[in-house]
Length: 170
Image (cartoon, rainbow, N blue to C red; front, side, top):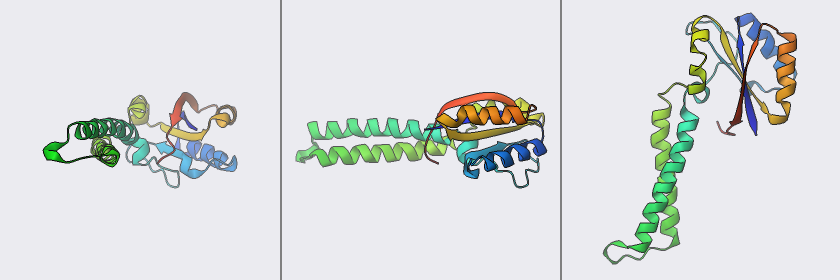
C-alpha cells in the first residue's frame, strides 16, 4: 500500500534538487507530484495531475460504494417483488449491483473532478505565497527512509505529514 508524504518547498530549484535525489533513490517519476501557484514555471518537474489536484479519487470511491449499495438494494427488491410477473435470479442482483456501482462512480467522478483536493487546500496559502507542495507516493516501509533523506539533505523543505493510504489507481 502506498503512502503519500507532503513537503512544502520554498523554491523551484529546491524542488528540482529533491526530485532528482528521489529519482536516484528509485522513486518513480509517476509517484512524484508538484503543486505550485498558477503561472509558476515548473519546467521539467512532475506537475500534479487531475487525480492528485482534485477530489476525484475520494469521490469515485464514495460513488462506487453508494451506487453499489443502491444497486444491490434495487436488485434485492426486484428479486423479492418481481414486477409484472417477471422472474429474476442472482444474475439480476449482480447486474443491478454492478450497474449501480458504475453509475455511482460515473456521477460522483464528475462532481469530484470539479472540487479541489481537500488535503491540498490546507496548503493553499503557502502555495499562493510562492512555495511548492511536493507529494511523494512510496511504499509504507520506505516512508521513514524518504522522510529522513529529504529532511537531512534539504533542511529548507518542511515535512507536512503523511496520508495513511493512497489508492493503487490512478
